[in-house]
Every structure is written in C-alpha cells, then in structure tokens.
Amino acid sequence: MTCQRLVRATSKGKGMFELGFVDLRGRLRSKTYQTPRDECTFSETILMHRSDGTAATSGDWGDRTHPNVRARVGATYKTPRSVFGFASLLTREGEPHQLCVRSLLAKTEARIESLAPGVSVGYELEFFCDEEAAPAGLSPHADFDLYGARLSGGVGFRLLDFLIAQGPPATDSIQHFCKEYEAGQYEIGTVPASPLAAADRMVLVRELLKTAAQSSGWGINLQPQPYNVSSGNAFQISVVVPTLCDGTKPTETLRACARLIAQRVTEDTLAFCPSASSYARLRNQEFASVNDWGEDRRDCLVRLVESGNVVRIEVRLADPSANVHLCTHLVLSTILSFLEELEQPNTKLKPEPAVLPMSLSDSARRFLSGSPRSLTPDQRKAIVAVLQHEQKQEDDYHP
Image (tube, rainbow, N blue to C red):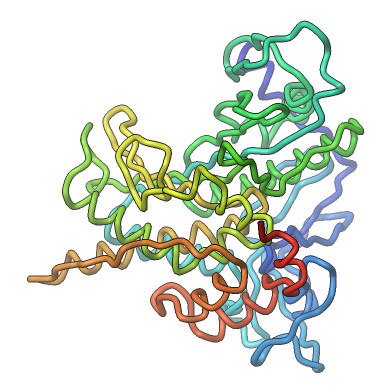
C-alpha cells in the first residue's frame, strides 16, 4: 500500500464549510454553512458547559447576559464531509477571548518561537474498542506502517481503514497505529508539527475516530480505563525544542526542564485529567510509585526519550478526553518560563518535588493556585467551573 494511495483526495462534501473551535472541556463546537466564511458568532456560554450539559458560571463569564463571541478562522483543513475552518475566539472589541484555548496556545507558540525557533509537537492517543467484533485468527499485537503493509489487526484496524479512506487530515497526521497492552486497546501516534497545527489536527483526528466508530457500530471508549496491574489508557504529549533537546543524550539543562515540567503538571493535573475516572487510574498500582521524571523509562510523569539526533520531552499524564490545546499550552508555557529563566544571569531553578493529586477535588484546589505564568486566576476559576464534577461522581470512583 503506497503513500500515494493513502493520501487520496477527500470527498467533495457538496461544498459544505464547517467553522468551529474547541471549548474549555476540549470538545469541538461548530456550525455548518453552504460556502466558506471567515467568521461567525457563538454564545459565550457555550464555553461553560459541564460534561453533563449543565451551564457553569464563573467570574465575568457565563452570566445571564449571554454575550456573543466571534469565531474567526485561523486555519482550514479538508475533512470527509467538508472544509473545516479552525477558529480562534474574539471579544466584541476584537481582542483574543481569555477563555479561548486556541488563542492561548497561539500566543505561547509565538513567544517560544522567539527563543527557540522550530519547536515541534506530536501526540499518542490510546483508546479501547470492543474486540468481540474482531475477525478470528488474528495476532493479539500488530503494528500498522502508513507507508507499508498492515500485518494483522482487529476492530481498531478496521476503524483505521475507515480513517485512511477519508484522506486528510487523518493521512496527513497519523504517523503510527498499533495494538496496545490491554485487550481492545489501541494507540494512534501523530506526525510532529508546529504546536498549533499539531493540536488542531489531533482534535480533528480524534473527531474522525469517533465518527468512524459511530459509523461502524463498533464503538470506542476514550475515557481513561483504570486497571489494577497496568496504567490503562492515556494521552501523551511529545515536544522537541531546538537547542534544548539537541543531541543524543539529555543534558543537565534538559533534565532540569523535565523536573520543572513534572512539577507544573502536578499543579495543573485537572487540565490533563478532567474526569473522575482519571484519578481511579492514577491510584492504581502502576502509579502508586510513579517517578516525577526519568530517562527513557515509562513509570514517570515526564520522560526524556532519545529519538535520532534529539531527545524529546514526553508528558505521559493526560487522559484521552483532555483538552488538547489547553494541555499543549500548559506544557509549552512551562518550557517557555524555563527558557526565559535561563536568559537571566545567576538564575538557579529549584523545582519542588512533583506529587500527584489523587482525587478530582484535590486536583481542583491545586489548579486554582497554579503558576500565574500559564493561566490567570480568572481563567483557572472558569476552567474549574467547567471541569469539576459533582462530589458524588468523585466518591463513586474512590476504591
């Protein structure tokens, strides 16, 4: 199976145009039009919906006035149904909206590019599907090389067939696909790209995966699955920063950066793990003795992985339903603050030990007092209002 066959044109979609953005919970919100357009309006309260559909209020947002926000297209992508315009949100004054996660990431990308041009980001998304529908006689583990041949597979590989048949953005973005440790567990890895483009494409691939599952009738589960003897499924973020990550072995500077990222990730765990089941996963045996960071090992929150001529930074905490743009922003803003501190003479960074919160309520408390460099207090309050579940839901997941 050749690259040319895989990168086939998308269906015409009858000229439809979707314009959308990502809300605080990481869900894709969109409107469909007959012809392309640069912007449209949404109610600001659409940002403030909890997972159960109820509206949240926090500070100046989600109040009774229900003001409109403008969604202005920043990039377009071909999808099976249409052309998708990925938008950033603006206030009525035309400024970036404070609750727009895409704007947060865009600003952080621009700042970090000024210090270390060429930063790239890639993702690994793990999910579960029902293997009862898998054909008999297949190997329990199989890899799929997008530029080679499929060795074997199951339901997950049938879903991959669907993705490939749609063309971009799946064929432009998927770097690898493989069977994972648990029964019915699969992983999609994306091609590294600039941060904003990488996050956009990861969101679209995740949406296409949901569509594939719905169309096939097999179904998938993107919620973190806790197991007693393994770490379940996760969403991993890999970053390569030129100069900082150059070389085949981690430098002391890169190790110091990894320690700082691990500390900040534990402060901001709520964004990376937005559901109660995340904390059931974190409380299992695999995470009971987890390290804050490590070199080329898996029992840690942040690991440094030798990859060719560079060492990539891999954040291994998030769950598959996390807000891709927000998590990427938080990781990059930590790296940015680290690089800015290096510019100051006689600066000695001393990250605190990274200790994971073990409940949703504990995570929310920590999140509210997290680093002001990455999110303002008002932004943190708004995110907590959306992500924090009722206490009963949390109690149900305690062992």
